[in-house]
Amino acid sequence: MSTLRSTISMRRIHRVLLSASLLSSVNLLASAATMPGPQASSELTVTAAKVSAKVDAKVSAEASRQLNALAEQYYNKQAAFEPIGASYNGDTRFDDKLPMTIAPAVKAKQVAMWQDIASQLARINRQALTATDAVTYDCLDFEIHANLNISKFDNQLLPLNQMDSLPVTLAQFASGQSAQPLKTVTQYRIFLHRLQQLPLWLTQATSNMREGMQRGIVLPKALVVSTLPQFAQLAIDKVDDHAYYAPIKNFPADFSAADKQSLTRQYRVALSSKILPALRQFNQFLSTDYLAGSRASSGWSALPNGDVWYRAWVKDQTTTDMTPEQIHALGLKEVARIQSEFVALGPKLGYQGDPVGLPAWIDTQRQYRPYKTEAEVLDGYRQIEKMVKAKLPALFDKMPKAPLDIRAEPEISRQTASDHYTQPAFDGSRPGVFWAVINNPADYSTTGMTTLYLHEGQPGHHFHLARSQELDIPKFRKFGGNNAYTEGWALYAETLGKEMGLFENDPNAYLGHLTDELLRATRLVVDTGLHSKGWTREQAIEYQQATLGYSEAASRQATERYMAWPGQALSYKIGSLKIVELRQRASAALGSRFDLRQFHDVVLSDGTLPLALLEAKVDKWIASQKTN
Image (tube, rainbow, N blue to C red; front, side, top):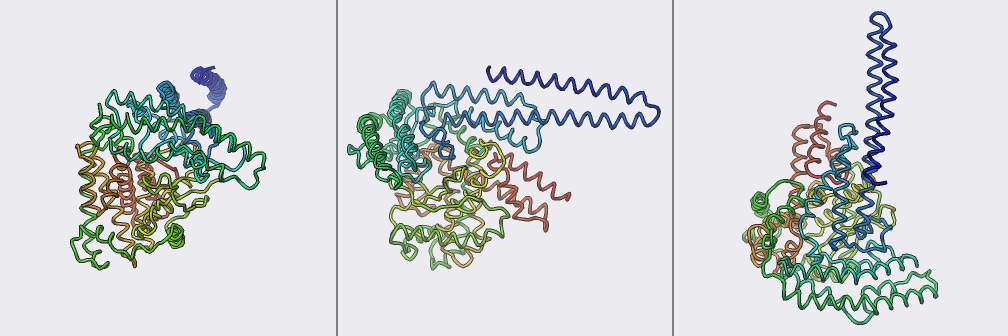
């Protein structure tokens, strides 16, 4: 039976039951009508109210049941299409699969699934839902239509870049330190089965990229050049030195000799006979044909239909209707505001020059680079963690239950990765992890460490994403969402360092906070400049060097990130400014009754929301506080 027919049958049964209930109620009303005087009228009114409430409760319960069944259906189907994402969620059902949505036929099936979910959702009576279920309805409606909007474009023709590459993700998984568990013999075999599907994925990626070359939908040459070193590492001949062979080098102690021997043979055969030859073939294509066919332009608007495509990315990443032009102007305004704070801060650090040059000057001060080893850097973050955890109870009533770990980014992705966070597994088998990118410990500066921990760790991503998993909400809300809220909350969390007193006696750390905020403001300028205003890669690099004091290398890496992920960098500042705006609105409206801990709980208690839904929720809370 199809989903559509099942839904129709279910609703027919519901109507029959409802009709029987109403018939019984009519009989009761008829009996009441025969009673004499005011008593008849009174009892009639009471009975009618009870009947109405009973009917409303049934309608609401049925709508809720339909919605939650649909939400579960959506999560399961989406996880099957996106098994790598499921692994990151701690959902191990698809750990032996690779995503094949870059294949046109599979993408069409995924789009058809989204359309079916949207159709089923539209048939659910939203007005009958409880307030809690209405949030789920609105989140699902937003997410499905956002997916459908982006699916109109040919993203499958650009299946990888230096920031996001399935083969590199598999190398991270093989380390045993990422999302895929490698602790049992069965898990080793499951991962090998996943690896064995890589040649098919690479064949499809090559086909897509060749089509992109014919249609002018290709990566900028600079991004191809930055991607090549990753694939050079993956295309090596020697199995023993390959990243995918890491599980064999790191057997758990409880594996038997027979299991070790069997797994070693299976991994060796699979890698040498199919997987490594496919990687070498792809690397050859990437470094010759594709590099030669890549484009000299930098921004998305240079692609066919690129301006419309980029505007779709902006809408997707900000969850707003702001235009690139509005965002660019906002970015310039924010840059000027933040730079004005350097005037008073410079002298506290011993700097007497032009305030705009403060970030570049601090980069030359060796006293803020005390580390010699990777372990020392990680220990520095753990010291910051101790200070932060002591301050959190004053700002938050609720803390995430899952622990947070601090780890160094794996070597294979350090050159192109940014510091980031991965959420814990919902079954508790893996903690949340703050990944610090440490290329050279001797060059690692303390200036930005406090702010970075607040963003990637606590109370940033960890408080949002780990807490979301604890909420009684559908799985698609626990693990999905949008960047505007996710990165907006983490950037807002950075500002709490000032209220925690972390910057009061440490002007170096406060400069780190300001320069990180300045970075997010420059992103509004650079991202829209690149993708909407025709900026070249070199213009963007020069702007960041002048504004942020970045080295050429750091500015180049940041610029190429924005080139690879159009619109993603806009989400931080747009989301953060909205949360700050809502906090100021609540504080002004409630005065002495404003409780910051309650405000934070209101923001976090429903997990990830589109910004318009978050604003409506906070406004509703403000109104309820006024009447209490």
